Each structure stands twice: as C-alpha cells, then as structure tokens.
Amino acid sequence: MRQEDIANGIGITVPTLRKHYSAELSAGAARERMAVLAKVLAQAKKGSTSAARLYLQQVPTSVADPEEGGNPKLGKKEKAQVDAKTAAKGTEWDDLIGSGANVTPIRKAS
Image (tube, rainbow, N blue to C red; front, side, top):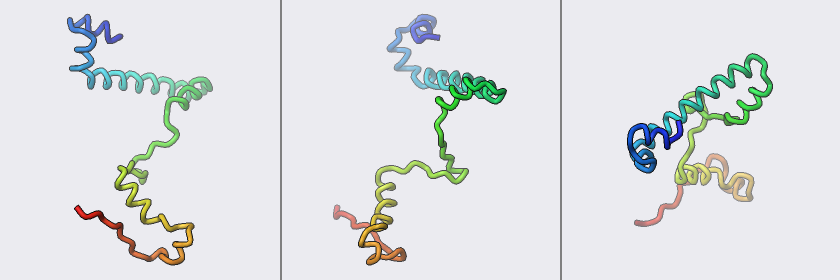
C-alpha cells in the first residue's frame, strides 16, 4: 500500500506515520522485496533468462557472512590498525622491518 493510503486508513498524517512507524514501514517493504526476489529466483531456476538477469541485478555479487569465514566490515579505527600492520609491504621499508617485526602504533598523549 502507499503510505498515503496507510495514513488515511489509520487516521493520521503521512509525516506522523513516517515518524512513529518508520521501522514497520521499512520492515514491511523489505519483506515484500524478499518475497518478490524469491519468486524471481524460482522462475530463474526454471530457466527464465529474464528472471535470472533481474535477480542478478538486484542481489549483491558477494555477501560476506562472518560465520562462513567472510570478513566482517571494519570500522575506521580497526581498518587503520590492520592497514598499519601491512603498510611497509612492497616498499623499501619492507626489508628493514621484515615480516616478523612487532610494530605497535604510536598513541597520542591524552
């Protein structure tokens, strides 16, 4: 349903609907997208090339699942720490530091 129709049905304005029911609106929309994609996938498995093309356009090519060994998305600080450990690789510092060096990041004084 359109948000205008939902708001009219329960007797509130659209901004009020969005303010107080944003989670429900998002969850409902996500459920509907999943249902449509499930039907498109079923058609693709039956051999429909147009359904397969549509499904592949909507689904990301790689979905990392931490339980399946994928890499979880890191925050800025965690990414910087990981990058700092391999910063010398491929540079003239690589020979000086070596792969077994224990390099700790410099912390700013508080």
